[in-house]
Length: 121
Image (cartoon, rainbow, N blue to C red; front, side, top):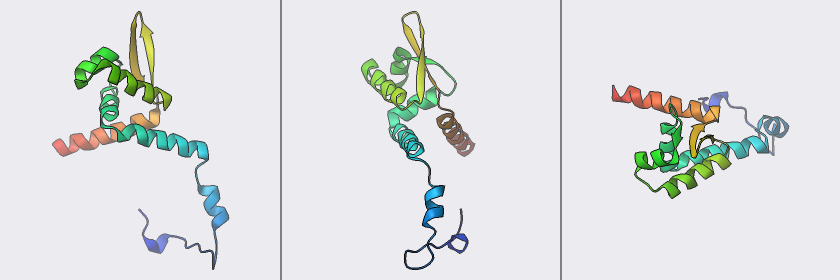
């Protein structure tokens, strides 16, 4: 992290770097994708579901059994995660098996998992 001595000062009444600052900002699409990720990770149920999906493809019924919540609640959470383009599913006969498709989310979860494992040692 930078300290204040390394930051460039920009001011509307002095030297302004507004053009440079605007160029450095993420696009609106990138910002929206970031908010989706933050929304997904801000819900404890969805976060547990995503951690479970790190190493497994899991059907709705199995996720329901794992978390001790109704299948309709699990389906609703998967619907949200699909809308955010974080998970997708593969059909096998009548079952749908969910998996993480967003590599950024997967990397975030793997980093958090590694930190949790270090603390447990």
